[in-house]
Image 1 (tube, rainbow, N blue to C red):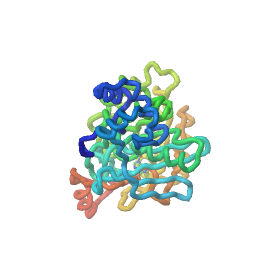
Image 2: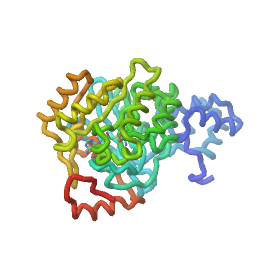
Image 3: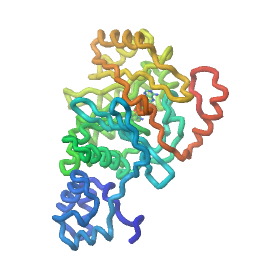
Image 4: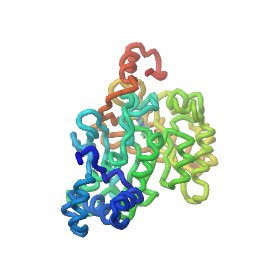
Length: 374
Ligand code: SAH
């Protein structure tokens, strides 16, 4: 069997791996053993999986493989943030993945697609267009690489938190993301609690409702504007799923989970969405939803048409919403010197949407701060 026909075991969550072993005439509990070898011990060579019978190891050698993304660039920021460029399929497509060490936890920011289809006007990933969804193996492979690199460096603890806030819209790659979440939270793999795994979405309403049926990981919603008129410009997906539908889906996501909250992300764009009037509207729409608000200072990138709000403006905005009873933090920007901050992840996208091409053209005649691409 050549490499392409082999089953990449990184694509399989526990129940799929049990099926895989059953189809080989093996006992399903082999799935737990093999998952522990791969995900917990970082062993990908079947020969080293010593509690498997020799015949089974040989069979696995024949039919299966553990194929990881390839790290092609590894950058370390002065603040300890680390960014990897990962090639997924030879030289063609690459995504970025960021490791953020803090005092008591280490957070990994994972990508879910090569590029993105949503085209948010302030996001640099959007400018690259879209190529394809990542597979489960490519998503969980990011965690594998980060986790085992920490352990290899002698850290006691690997990755403690995962945020799906890298490139792409995770809820538009639903099935692969769900399997990856299963592996993240599996006791025989990374044992992450669901509270420590966050999916961030620009607001794919039907997928939020579907997510609720399958899991209860933490949910972050990229809101960025308090009314439809402005949000239509910043997050074009809003034209399909306007704010009231989105907030309704958020409410239903929380049903039955008394102590949980939705995190709303709000990028601070100078002169666009940062006035006290915006703060007032925002406080009003979030009033009845158990929520936390993350104010994200806009991170610039070459050719960005927006600027970050002034520190003072951000503080005033924050003070206003806090006084309205909304738990709010201004996110610290990490890894700026290596372009690893929110919205700066670009990877390498063999753009199929031609958006990157159109964007280059439209940059020539930008007249205002409106949406500038195709
Ligand atoms: N598509 C998902 C996942 C991407 S998360 C989503 O939209 O939630 C990346 C987060 O960073 C989102 O909240 C996004 O809106 C925000 N972001 C994008 N570009 C940014 C920039 N230049 N500065 C700050 N935040 C940005």
